[in-house]
Structure formats: structure tokens, C-alpha cells
Image 1 (cartoon, rainbow, N blue to C red):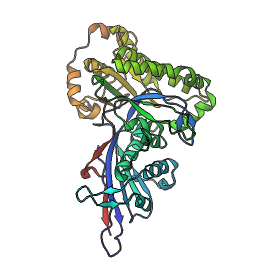
Image 2 (tube, rainbow, N blue to C red):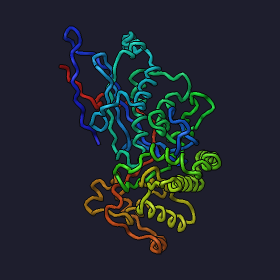
Image 3 (tube, one colour):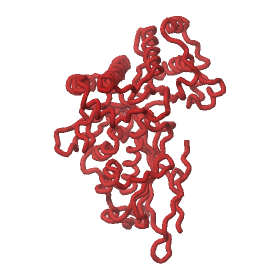
Image 4 (cartoon, rainbow, N blue to C red):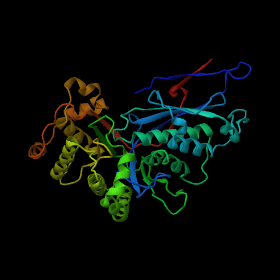
Length: 427
């Protein structure tokens, strides 16, 4: 998906000259948690009640693209999301935390050729910013679109202002004030978000890279988009209610998560998919159990989601090993982790049990046509099919809207001028 450029009128500067506009455009990835973040310890600093860990996904299909511009010609801060301007962006707490936080770390902008100072760091404070961002995947449907969006916002501002951290992880501390899990999208590969809490300003609530995207290059992910609609209960509202009413959530944060973090970090370092897959599925199940334990209960998964859980368990039972591991964020969409050697087999299963119209199969139902071709040619073991027939059935066309085949990937990437979202018209 390529966004339509946003045309913005800008007044001429004194002397009827074109205004100077400083620009930066970046892309940032989404991330899918294996150990879940759910519940805020401090709503002001947007910090979690427990550690979490995720895999940053490749940006080929799933990313946010953000253009950040600054100029003395801009009369106020403005924000456009997916082509529409957000009316009250300038006063939004989350937006302000990111813009003001990164601008406070700005440095002088130096001309790379002449080495002259183009903008002194204190002069950035005199400029307003225009921000435009779009996602290449469904927004607010449980695919961590806000994580990608706020990570892209912070990364674009860092690029624009030439910002420098005063301590490791400071940019991630700013990003999590926009969206908690955004801090994890600032790094590639497997990333942990340390809850922090030992410092009064929560500056120790930061993300750390556990292993980069090349460490476990065989890791794959198949994402089944069950719904691309906005979820009924937002993550922010859901967390607040869960913290207030779920005793299970408190027990999870105190007694369970730290043990699981140790298990999964060791599994990642050892490339132990059996251990990784088991703890990932268990944590997904417990997260949704806390949603059910919330009063009134929150239902993010639906019947299609639960059928995918059943399919994965029957597949693993037949294989006598964990070949696939499901996880569900705050939404019905399934992320299935597997290894490269099993990904075609798993995709063949998905296409068999979650069909689409024939003409859609090569026309966008799956993002990777080469993998579709291989999956359609793959002959599923007769014993596997027989085992699945006992408890699984082919779902209706449309129960799964789209399938993404992807892998781990890097953090934010600077883009050239051709990717800029803005088109400024001087008047």
C-alpha cells in the first residue's frame, strides 16, 4: 500500500521567498508480543505492570511510514493519520510527549558538504511540526498498528532533529509514552520491554534487544487476519478495567511473567522452538484468560480465533512436537510462529481450513504468491488430515480475510524523498 500524498499549503517567507522546510521520512515495523504487556503501573508515564517480549516483523508488508517536517512557516503542530487530519493533535498528551521528548534531545543540523550549521539546536524549539503517517495494514484490529505508528513518529523526529540519547534506550522511553509496545518496535529481532520502576521518573522502563533479526533467521510468522475492523474495546480501556477488576492479572504480573521471560529469552538464545512455542502459547492463553477474568469480561478472540488454536494443537499433536505456536494480541487475529522448514506445510493447512474465493487466492488473499504456489502444490500427510478431521472443519469463505507470510526484521529505516508523504505547495 502506498499512501496518496497530502498536499499542504505553506505561506511564503518574508521577502516573498520560499520557506525553508526541514524533512525526514522513516518506516517502522510492527511487533507481535510472545510475552504479553497488559496493564499500566503508572498511567502518566505509560509504564507496564510486567516485562514483555516480542518479535519485530519484517517491513515488506507490515509497517508504518511517517514524514516529519519542521519550519518557521508552520503556524501550529499538525498531524495526519492515514490521510485524515487529526483535529486536536497539538494538545494530545501522547503526541506531545513524543514531539517534545525528542525535540529536547535535538542537536545542531550540519550541512554534510559545507559543514556549516543549518539549524542550531535551540532553534528547533521555534518551529512547529507537521506529521503525516499511514499504516500498510489494518489499524486498531489487534496487529499492533499503534506500536508501528508511534515508533515511526519517534524515529522520524529523531531523524529530523538529529536527536541524541543521553542514556541507552532513551528513545524507547519516549516512544512508550505514545504507545507502550511502540518502544519494542524501535529495535529489530527479539526485543524485551523492561518494566522498570526503580526510578521515580520511570526512565528505566525501556526496551532492550535480546537478539537481532539475523540471530534466528529460520523463524517465520503466518498472520491470519480474522477481522480488519476496529476492535470494540480499545487496549487502553481494556487494560484499565483489567487492572481494576482482575485478580488473575495481578497474580500473573507478580508470580508468572518473570519466570516466563527467563524461559523465552533462554529459548531464543538457544534457538529452542519447542520451549519458545510452548511458553508463547501459554502466555497468549493466560493473557486472554485475564481478559475473561476482567469484570465485565472482555472478548477479543472469537470462534474463528479459537478454531485456529484447536488446529495448531492438533497439528502439533500429530507431529509429536511443537511445529507451530499461536499468539493473539488484543484482537481476533492469529499470529502463527513456525520455522522455515515447516512454513509451507503450515500455510497449506491454513489455506485448506480457511479458504477464500478461488479468484482471490493469487490476487491478494495471501501476500506472498510464491509461497501460495508452494503451499498449493504441497501434499499434506494423510495421517495429518485424518487426525484433523476428528475435531477441525473447513471454515466458511471469508472467516479469514487475509494471510500475511512474514519473518523477523529490523527496526526503523530512513527513507528517501520519494517516500515522503507530504507535498508542500507554496502560496
